[in-house]
Image (cartoon, rainbow, N blue to C red; front, side, top):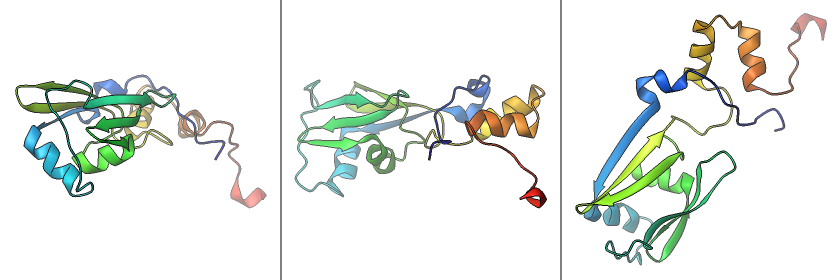
Length: 143
C-alpha cells in the first residue's frame, strides 16, 4: 500500500522495550534451525557461516546466512524469537548474540513512536499523518 512507508520517529529509543538482546549457544542455534532445515550444517568457527548478507532499504535484515542455508530476516526473527528484523549479530565464546532495535515489522504506526509524539504535543491527526504518508482524514458523515 502506498501509505505504508518506513518513517523515522524521534524519541523511540527512550523506551525500554525498544532495544533487546537474544543470546543463544551454538547448540541452541543449531537445534532451532534443524526444526526447519534438517540438513543444516554450520561451522561456528568460520566467520562466513553466520553472516548477514543483505539489508532492506530501511536497514533491516533481508537475508542472513547460516551455514549451508540463506534465510530471510523475517524467518530468522521467527525462528529465534527476535522482536524485529532490525538486528546485528555477534559470535563469541560458543554463543551467538542478536542485538535488536525496535519491536515489530517496521511498517505502519509505531506504538512507542506515537506515544513519544503525543507526549511532545502532537495531535492524533499529526500522528496518523506522520505514520500513514499521503493519507487524508475525512469525517465519515461527509462521504
